[in-house]
Length: 240
Image 1 (cartoon, rainbow, N blue to C red):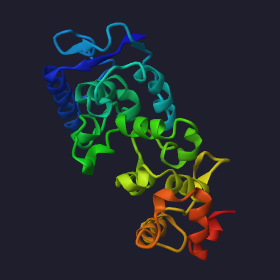
Image 2: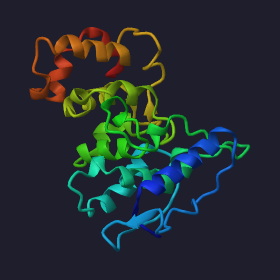
Image 3: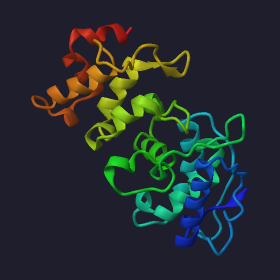
């Protein structure tokens, strides 16, 4: 167990330097040495602790963090930059695992250092899944299609369904996507359901169809069953 903290500005800059080091092939060991250094981080709520584990899916990571974060008194938890940056650093083995040669590949900073620009808001590798988990906390299984991926590689379903607030905050849209494309046996998206081109019944056809339906229907007022009834027949193949 380790004390839950948030980075101060010096801690964030130290983490940025770690990401830069990784990008040029530097091998980063965990836990990071400054994770609980009071020069770089301050305790959250004084006595909250969290266990640093590795997780194979976004949903597992979010389920682990959510009970602890519920105890954090923050006026705007989702915009607590220091906290989310610290959590990314603390769970680096999940969100930026080392490859076989021991090198990590962090990609863009916004995946680890949160930004309030909505174009990248949902792309933070810890805040993103936690936000979805909390939106669907009464039954997170309804959002499995955007929680089943590796924490380090969210993939196309997350990009297509979470990039716009009117989609990810609409339970019907996410639940229907889950019914269409999530394979409950494998715990993964169904094979062939997210090709790069918008083939009939697939993910990109679903999102473009939502844009069309939004011109006629109040999608926020619809249940998942309501939404399924107005989808074109091409989606029937994925409902079996």
